[in-house]
Amino acid sequence: MKTLRDIGEDALIERLITLVPKDLDPAAGPGDDCAIIDLGPSLPELQLLKTDALVEHIHFLPSAPAEAVGWKAVARVVSDFAAMGGRPGHFLVTLALPAETDLEWVEGLYRGIGACLKRFGGILAGGETSSVPAGSAAVISIAATGWVSRGQQVRRSMGKTGDSLFVTGLLGGSITGKHLNFIPRIVEANWLVSNFLPSAMMDLSDGLAKDLPRLAKASGCGFRVDEALIPLTPGCTVAQGMGDGEDYEMLIAIDQAQAPMLVTEWAKAFPELALTRIGELVELGGGQALSGGWEHFQGITGD
Image (cartoon, rainbow, N blue to C red; front, side, top):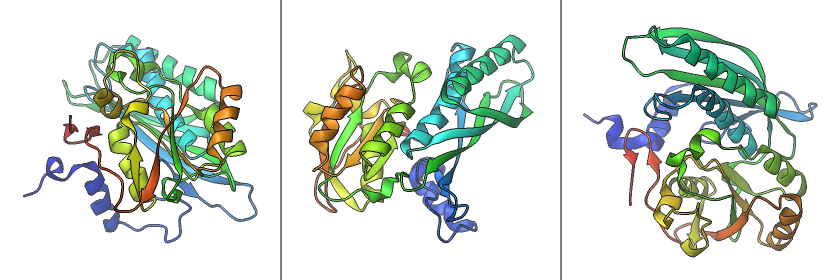
């Protein structure tokens, strides 16, 4: 009998979505950073839908500051809105906690949630609370709506052969604490789609070695990466930069003709945030393979 460990997250999703009704013509459906829903051609915006969960011992340790956990819970969703070129709207928060959870910890969690919502313009609309058996892991689940201007939506699947690949910021070392206090790149992403609409984009949550192949596959392409160009967090190796995960930086595919001007204008707009060209998309079947990154049900894979 096969288990979830045997097949991994991506294969599981591919199997499950065949078992349920689906929109036959979604603007973007399962497999992208968010679902995109077209509520009517007369509206200037498309709706974004996103759900995400933090699980104790997987996404945070019991010793993690409660406010940082709350911040991360919301910031992960904001990062996914950024990957689609959008912005956040209304949020629902579901807590599943052991009865012995300290009340002060829960209040701290909500202070962190509130701080992130306030900074990025999200609004709490409701939620749910539930108990779990004593000793079980705490779970914080976030569901949210967002919006993206029609014509500025970006999907993983629209990259094309010859596109230049860029990443924002520095990669690797999330376990040292970066995964709890990162800033989702929504300001930068909104600037990007207004000035240099990417072919494809996604946020790096499971590591470049795991997420880049996902973007390339969705776009029907292969890829080449120059590992010497990967921007690393000080003290990190290339393997860590490729595989640690939870960087929440943007992976961007853009027409190579736009790349030089993008680099110039980005440096003016965001002088304190690196934008690094790391490679290109190539024809399907060409390029290279990568190993490493986080795989749910299997843990860290590769080197």
